Image 1 (spheres, one colour):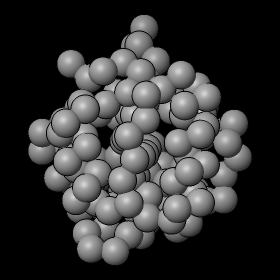
Image 2 (tube, one colour):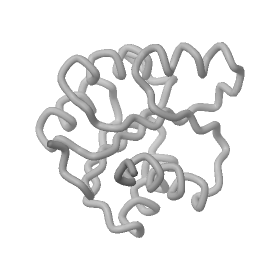
Image 3 (cartoon, one colour):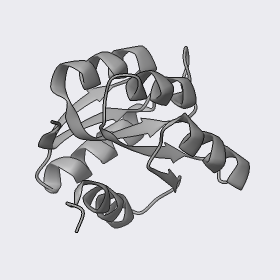
Image 4 (tube, helix red, strand yellow):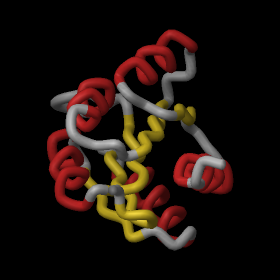
Length: 123
């Protein structure tokens, strides 16, 4: 069972990665961050987070492939965060295993709300 207030942030841009970490830590999450998909997959395997934020455009393996690999072993809730806003990209993200999709630029408050919605217990 995923750790309830643990998050993994997978984002290659340092400024965005730092912002996401600060927002999630402010919401009470223990946050582990990675700059690449492969490192992020390892963090998900190691920490079993309740939620994982995942950039789409990264060097090496992209966010779609990263999500597929995570889905092979984890039930973490995945929030894809991307500058790509078109519906086709969002569809591909969901098919790869994303639970939600947030476009950049985003408001920190919106990021926090999306994450809280993802980890809220089902009624």
